Length: 255
Image (cartoon, rainbow, N blue to C red):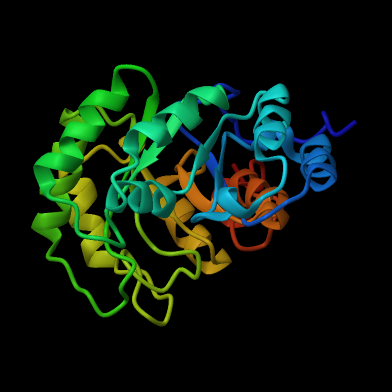
């Protein structure tokens, strides 16, 4: 219907770049179905936020529903960390297999996991799953030097991570952002000076953060912690169909 518009070229699923990583905070089955009937072409991964999976009825059926639409699902990193804390990693692995998941998230943003232990989990899980690693703290007051970010990202990638998620929390007020939500531009510049941004997923729950990252890295930037209600909005930003990015991405004009 809208073929008359000249739009920027977008990669198609399954994508390696231009990923939209969505945060599900507790959808029911009907909500999942309604959401994907509209947005499935623009959703690349869904994370069941934090430990919400443990209190979600019919979670196995929910995962299966997402995956029937071609959308892989993973449990939240905090859920993994709780399993590590309680020495229940084998039970976690059994649950992931039971749900027939193809990806997992491994993080240490809430509890202290020794570096070698985290890398060991990465190496082990990468043999069977597509692994998302997360770097950065959920504590807004904790400031990590840029070189430490780079070292941790590079170690996780070397250990087998498919993509590394740059932490921001669901609120977008920690990690790669200041407590106000403002982008730590110098930090991100130093990270991408050493690491190909295609290997990263930048958590960007706030529209202003999404705009900054798309303007900095282009429409194929990998973005995470996107609310389901914001998926179509983000896609219009990627295509220059919203005022924030028309000048950068909308084709035509004087050229």
